[in-house]
Image (cartoon, rainbow, N blue to C red; front, side, top):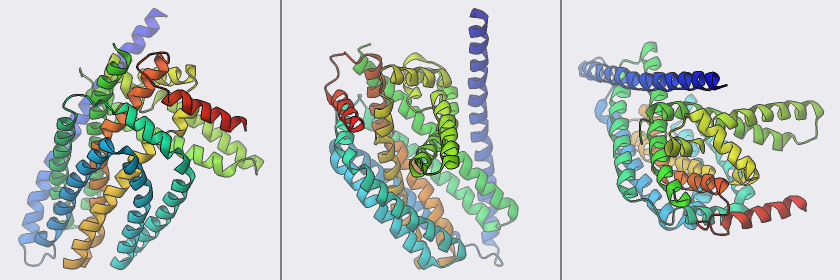
Length: 413
């Protein structure tokens, strides 16, 4: 048994080291690619036969990136100082902004924009229906967000500002490379853009989760009375958690829609739900708390935190928590604002650039907002994990016990 544990530990260390090396290598390679594409783009733009106009392509996108930084910081500040207002705005105004994005894309008029516009409008309807469904949970979401962030760690604002600035600089840097690829516009350049967007997604997840681990560690220590070399663990979690979270969310939605109306569909949904439940045990965002506090591997940390939730009978409470949905809706709202800024600007000065500028602007706004709100999500996660490990601690008020009683009464009825 001891030999098995030691072997598992060695494998885990090698895996973390491998992911850490891969992450740094992709940063270097993407930086080289972006520099080459940028230089080539300006060379292409200098030719009289080339139709790419950097003076009309870059300003709307860089302006939307600046908007992302400003709006994300303001949104983070509102979330800390008035969680109730922030939650209501995110869930009620977010769908309207998404609908506005859909209308903008329909006005642009090209086939891709029409498809995106249709998806955005349908998405806004779904968001509105979801908001109506979860509205009774707003009060508890406000309470848990308030109590968990009531005493933020020292220099939290500094961490957030530095993270936003880092994201802005990195986003602007990649935008220059995307512009260079757009100037040439070959099939290979489209592949380059896709690769840049994929690595951008992973890198932003890593930045968000590094902030998440750092803040959750401090908050856990506050709640429980009790960052070293974590990049490899965070890289693994950053690649795994979004995928598993999507699978589990879709499984829960499928099970709710199917219900028991059709035996075959119900059995398929139940099988998919069990798969999602197994995956979430070994890859969930609450595991980042133990990664920061105990320096564990990500899978082990996820399994331990999920096991603590099961022991404390908190799974129904965790499933009904709106913190993750709040951060997602906030990211979509800020991304939509950036899309409206960049897309409208591009539509006014060069219509053919409006679609791609709108898409890139949304990516930038969404991810920068998610990084800005990592502090709130980390505080809530640390609160749940610390409570699950010691529910009797005097550090906790009656917020969670009261909510558990409400859920029990609802299920019994």
